[in-house]
Image (cartoon, rainbow, N blue to C red; front, side):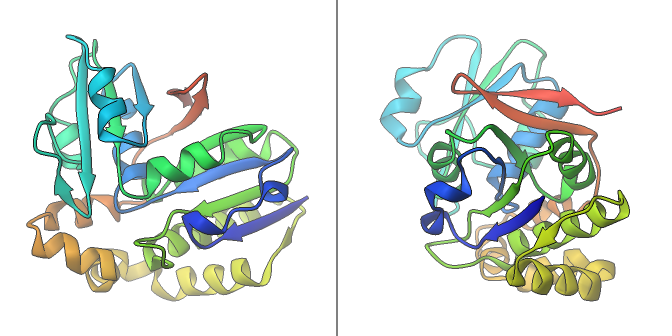
Amino acid sequence: MRIEVVPTVEEIRFDQISNRVVIVIDVLRASSTIVTALGNGFLSVIPVETIGQANSLRTPDSVLAGERHCRKIPEFDCNNSPTEIATRANGRCHLILTTTNGTRAIQKAERASALLIGCFLNATACIQHALTHHLDITLYCAGTRSEFALEDGLAAGLMLVQAQKLNAQFQVCDLGEALKASYLHLSDRLAAQLLQTTTGKRLVQNHFGSDLHYCAKVDHYKLVPFVKEKRILPHLVS
């Protein structure tokens, strides 16, 4: 078994998707929003690439969330904010979500054998579930504005650390080894580190500092979002 890391949304190759489990990681903030939505009672999350697609799917039992470069889309119900999404669930709604990078990554990896959504909030549950498929795994970091995002890499590093604790026998690419070492070095100050990242600084400038502290929580949820027929549904891990 091999675990490979892809650093940005643009860099995924077909051989890194085909016959693999792919975990899309967009810590700030699409993955964290999806995990939070399903963990707080949304029935499903529907990821779409464009604003027009999102509006076309609007129904009375849906909530539209999204951003472009951290800013809320004007006609939407809320931003791509996990702390805001947590207050909108009522047990009957579906979340329709479009973001700058995360939802694009999900669509680009839709041909994977299993497509999961991961972040700090569900890192252990996510890698644990991925390993049960007994396939090679791709940790697919969404990045930010076509560049590598450290927060995504640190979450990938955490998943690699947890995979080793589960005594799984696997090979790791060089980037994965570097990210694992980075996570171990910074694990006791994740929230502070996220504040120093490119996306973190941008979120603070846009008054989303509370999201940063929330997204740095490790293993807050024991659920794994998985993609099935264009929808993201929750799988609970015991």
